[in-house]
Image (cartoon, one colour):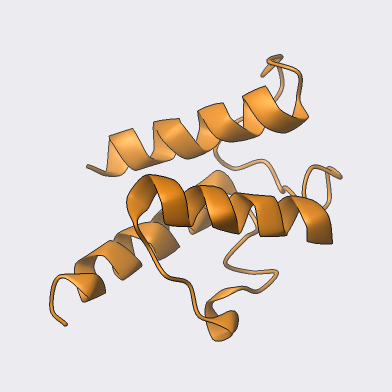
Length: 87
């Protein structure tokens, strides 16, 4: 499951903001420092996560740390998917 989530997030970012060119981009790339994520891109990414993984992110879930890399976003999504199954 983790690999699928990671791949879908990575593919979305590469397709949407990197014009399909993922050279030099990996799961540890700092999305903010590299200029990929700004406030508008973050909102679009949140909508993508909600639509794709049926997650509902709370405002407290969205921070510079949770949206730093593909890996941190994947961890957040997996945690939300796990907690939604317990509701």
